[in-house]
Image: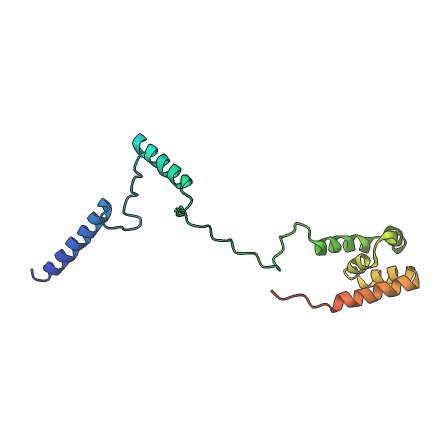
Length: 161
């Protein structure tokens, strides 16, 4: 019988706290019901209008702000760029796959108006034998520029995240 007394006392205390929380006397988040907002009566509204008018008339009285100021939203880091739906790397790979199946003369005609940087990115993904064939059919000066760009692009180290 003696060991039951502390257990009964604990149960009574827990039930009392839960009852106080449910009645709103003790605030227990998730258990205490929200307090209803008092309905504004017509007289209270008129009194509120008079008070507002009094504040407007008397410039020496400063109205107190009752609302809390909004906190500024944290700024996104400058390095954060919106995600793009375009993947240039994937595009270069697809074009390289096409070039692998084409003749070098046809490729030269297609890329006549391309920038050297764009050609170099795709040529780096083309099979080595096909890239050599394409470069050998180009003007030597342009082939030299493309080779230098390919070397430069190949030596870039990707950024670590």
